[in-house]
Length: 214
Image 1 (cartoon, rainbow, N blue to C red):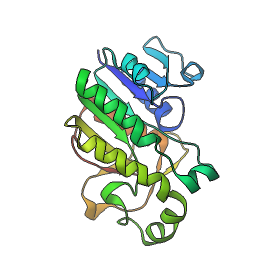
Image 2: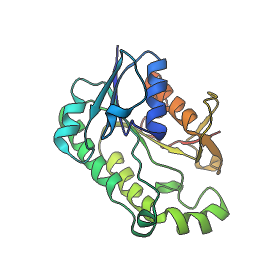
Image 3: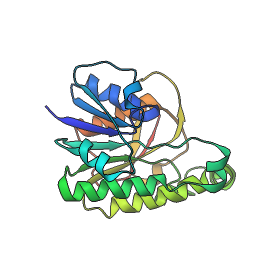
């Protein structure tokens, strides 16, 4: 039975991914600074407290796992809007270097619509106004994060969710790797997690960057 490491497992997509993977029968190692407060109790769940920027913490979490799902996030505060962040790229560099040295090879990384080559290609209002005013400084670092993953030579998938909403899982999502199909749509965090768990169980997007929307 596989062991899947979820980095950023305490909330949002990461927490929903833990639930989805457990539902699929996987053993899950949930990694976060506040891992002890994850509100799930299951004999197949191991909670590991650690910092994604600390190599020793990440190395400990990687021991014996078969795949990694990275779901990093930052608080959407005025400071992050104005100054941006380097968390995504620095944490990904730590993770990728360790995975190349020790394994495993399978990595699924969550970024977002507007990262990498999806920037400026989904919706005129979003691309011209919302993105530059609200998200650009955060996504500048997600661009660096994606380049690190693409250059890693691992068996990677970069999932780019659309506009995230809080809603129950439906199991209905579209994962689109053809840029001609990209559009700005919402997606429940739980349905992003469903895609991630499905991709662990039956990979279809290795070395691809699908947009995940409803």
